[in-house]
Length: 253
Image (tube, rainbow, N blue to C red; front, side, top):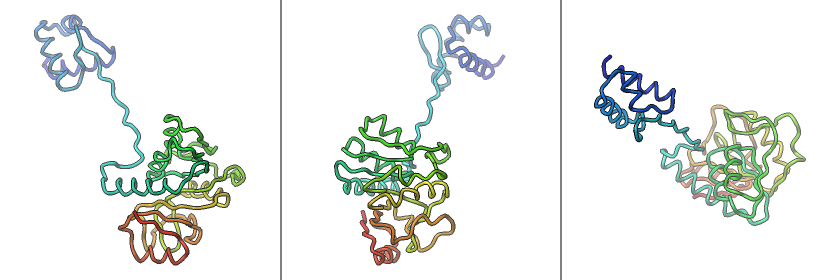
């Protein structure tokens, strides 16, 4: 048996058993103590096993932590973080806030975590974050958990009388002079159900989503329905002007 084959079998063995002693390697592979030690050292250096006293153990595979956005996209991340920080400043103690799904929504929820606010959300990662970080008042909208979108949907039962809030923060695929568009119809319908029960609608989208037109998607709401838009300073100036003309307060960050 050559070295490569032996190393592969050693790794397979330690994965199956969890731990293998040096004496076991010597006996099972009919090798000398010196060869066993060299094998252990090499496999440990390659990161295939972990060297411990008198043997080796398997390396536990770390589950990749969920992230609400691509943090390697630095420009996008920083703009969304600025939007979330500014959006958090318009909320006052004692208010109820509805936060829908999305990366900017998650960042906003993180900013509001720990403050004297009731946060209503159907975004499961945000709800989990708030609960894990001991936010006092978290209301999770009931329904069916959609793993693909990481949200809880209830598009059939009328939720309009179940939830209400001072603010609703939402985002979407694109914001044009016509209004806000969303990609997922079920998500849009679910969120539309409580639009009439909130006092102020705030759209939080990064500047790349401000556009003159959209190729596809569902119109979530007309621009005239939006109270405040918070976006980046690089947003299309013509579209921003057209939105302002419809009575929308625009905050550029």
